[in-house]
Length: 337
Ligand code: NAD
Ligand code: UFG
Image (cartoon, rainbow, N blue to C red; front, side, top):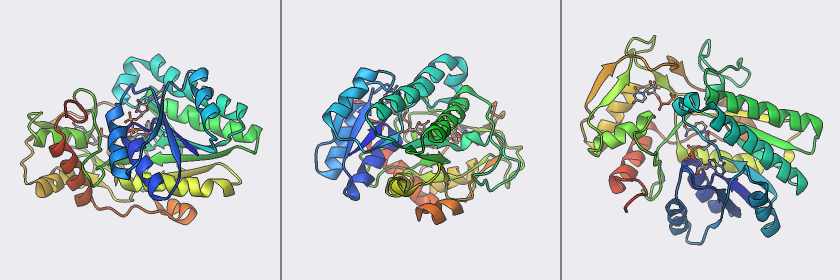
């Protein structure tokens, strides 16, 4: 049985479906601080069976031990964490507590129960402002905000754990920019309040909840001056986790892998692709650069292909189509539906 921490969230809920598709059994553990039970109800609807769920906090050893008492947990996919860069600058302690302390507690309880396999959600944010693109896993690491530092700390903590005890099997997955949603339109990204990220901002503008997109800067050194990112379909990302879990038993060292497509799209490329598939006009204005943003970030995904046998398959049009289906069917996300 696989324990999925943070499994009620955006990437976790999509991963549950792909685990089930592969016949892998899982239990979700989530404190619902950034999600709701509705996402798991929808997952149940899609997979046609109940989802095992325990509500609890990864910082609470008693909550965690409960799962190990109830289920025979073989490995953990660890999504649980806070993820808003801006909020992390305002509330650094909350981020270090939740993400870093939470992961330490999780690993302690895992070790006490002799479960030593973990797949961790890291981020391309650990590459800071890369000196060039595409980005390979051996690029120097740095970061400019507390959220990014939690990812760097946790990567190091998990590496130290392996050094101390080679029974640990650790996979660090560095995600690029996940967007899109499950084809059913039943689950998707449901940010609280005004979205920080590009795709939910665009889709909420398309559905009429927001007036206008602000494009943060058009004077970057990119093909049209706007920021370039490696957008990856969340279902491709979810499939990457299945491949990681299938690989984990054979590891002899910590495995660090980029999950991206290798393609970079600008903000305006995404606006155009979204307008095409949704047949909606996205009003936008060019504004100042956002603090901390970089010009260009996209992966070299070749290591993922060679080591996991995984590569992203879904196109930017499909990502926009699926985001749009989710948003138009659920204008208020999981609320009031
Ligand atoms: P999300 O907020 O939708 O999901 C995270 C889930 O973890 C939520 O359901 C939340 O309720 C739960 N959670 C948070 N703290 C918890 C705690 N202390 N105990 C139990 N549950 C807790 O976010 P997501 O986009 O699905 O991201 C999942 C992981 O991937 C996060 O670790 C995030 O940092 C990482 N990541 C996300 C992105 C992205 O752009 N979405 C990019 C890179 C990495
Ligand atoms: N952007 C806008 N307007 C908006 C929102 C974003 O122009 O309203 C631009 C940004 O300037 C950037 C691009 O759209 O050029 C993507 O921005 P996002 O906020 O969607 O994503 P980021 O690349 O800034 O960051 C995301 C996650 C981080 C993660 C990083 C790498 O939010 O947590 O990807 O994985 F670390």
